Length: 73
Image 1: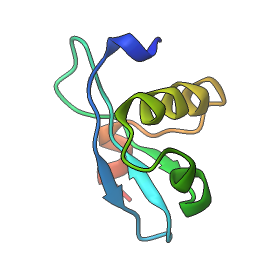
Image 2 (image 1 turned 60 degrees about the vertical axis):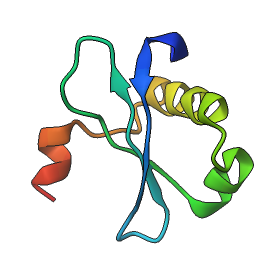
Image 3 (image 1 turned 45 degrees about the horizontal axis):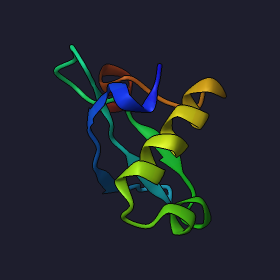
Image 4 (image 1 turned 30 degrees about the vertical axis):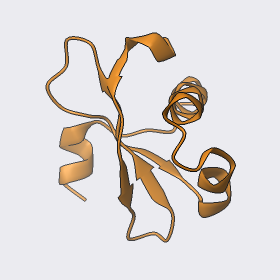
């Protein structure tokens, strides 16, 4: 996965106190949910390019949930 494959990215406040970045990849209908702490989010703020890079880093570290996993929480 690469940052240029993300067609859209958003931010949701998490019940855990941080944020969920919600990228949608080319060919997908639903986002995946990538939890980041508030400190991690503060490093990217609302910069979409930096958010995408952080998402790719977290995915490589296997720190994300699919939409169906997230919705069952």
